[in-house]
Picture (cartoon, protein in one colour):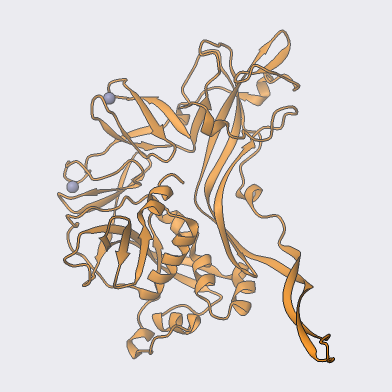
Length: 435
Ligand SMILES: [Zn+2]
Ligand SMILES: [Zn+2]
């Protein structure tokens, strides 16, 4: 979804992607951090730009990565849904492809416009998988021996048999999920209601009942924050989808919070094998959490839990267990694979100054990283039959989060971490920036 906006500094037109957190004006070079107050609120434009007396109907928009831990393994995918946020007959239940196909704007005050109140509260459960248990008939190939040869000997015949397979949903996670509101335009003429995009009549109740409507609130608009370092005033390093800004002058990292920025801690991972190679730093969230329900307090516990092929060392009994989650979006399957590899590898870190080399933008906030904890535990578990049914009862309490920049050797198409033996295709990371 693309958003048309005007530069708050010079009024020049700017086209933003829905995932952009930074507005960069091509005319006056202003860079501003975009911060919603509650939700991002967008509106679709009517086909007639001069239309007056618009009635805006709200739809919830929900997007993100989706993980489902089932009996047969972890399934992943991308969710992109819209739900009608009011109870009115005749209005379509979803917006379909309209958000992708049409021009949108941030909501702003327009005279003589009516906004319908979202009468239906958004709840993630409306996007959740409804059936906890499903049964599937599966064909299992098998070989049978039948007496069929010329001399009465047995011969092999391939056959299939049907089996009922039970699939249970043990846990579900939405990651990097965003909830926003998209307003669709309508208008009333001669007692009838019209869709202001297609100009078709809608068989619905009138939409101007004052008890269902609300007036534009200043809180619906986004805040624009300057992107200079709050500590030293230097220009920060941030890309259009960054949710963390770095300052190379005073080696600091900043996260938007309310109407300002909060300083966050970061460290750099050590890696011998990429020392003299062209490199890019990829950001990870390192999380220490109390986990109730499975024994995962120390690194030694992790080795046992995953039955990892590592000779146990006494010092691992006191070494804390950390979960490592990419701080950037990528394809859901690569995301989980790398989270597992890094959690097992648990690289060492140092508090060096900010690296001079490029840092891949942090586009996955730490709150989203926390949503993946159960999926990573499920993925690492050796005894899945025991662990998966217990997932709904596992409670986690986060003790500490830390941003760690990990050096990856860069080739034409890949980022590779030879110490951990893992890598990413560059195009998977670029694709992730638009989730
Ligand atoms: Zn400008
Ligand atoms: Zn600074």
